[in-house]
Amino acid sequence: MSMLKRLRCVTLDVTGTLIAYKGELGDYYCMAAKAVGLPCPDYKRVHEGFKLAYTDMARKHPCFGFAEKIPNIIWWKTCVRDSFVKAGYDYDEETFEKIFRRIYATFGSSAPYTIFPDAQPFLRWLRSTGVTVGLVSNAEYRYQDVILPALGLNQGSEWDFGVFSGLEGVEKPDPKIYRIALERAGNVAPEEVLHIGDSMRKDFVPATSVGMHAILLDRFKTADAENWKKSGAIVLPDLVAAKEWLTSQQLHS
Image (cartoon, rainbow, N blue to C red):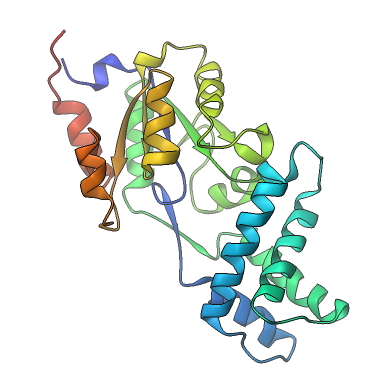
């Protein structure tokens, strides 16, 4: 019996699995600075500054400030301001406001993202077989409402339900986000669900801990992939290979 015949639901991670960032973070920060007549900030410093600022914000105000009801735009404004400060750019309030507005608008659109060519066909194929498709992502509401539809990933044609950390107040690697997905799928049994992601820590470990099946995609040939395999994960290069695996995998009852 193929794996597909055993499944009622497949959940997928979004960034790195269905879509990817285009270019570098510095490209977008640079465009925003130039638009207000300022020189380009240093790419490396901005990238490092952002990593520190984002990690800090995510620790202090997880799930994009869900529990404290911090408005999305305020969460990101604090994070972006801190990114610039950590990178050595302390703009005055008026200048920063102009730069931030451009950055926030850009990342709330499909502009910085690209969809993997196998994503839409794979999701549509899954749904055509009668499988429920869910998305499980550490992302805020704009993914669901704006970004995914703009990339051609629509609820009702490519996916059935979404579990986004900024809307739920729970984020990966907390296994609770996967339990929410099981409920959304119609309280299906975890052994009838497969999760596909690109992170051992955020996808494979928590999904399997609640009893789901899981596989990992290694789209970017990461050094970690060998360790994933050694830890017992099935690692595939893309969703074309995942479709093949789902339809040909013979499992012993």
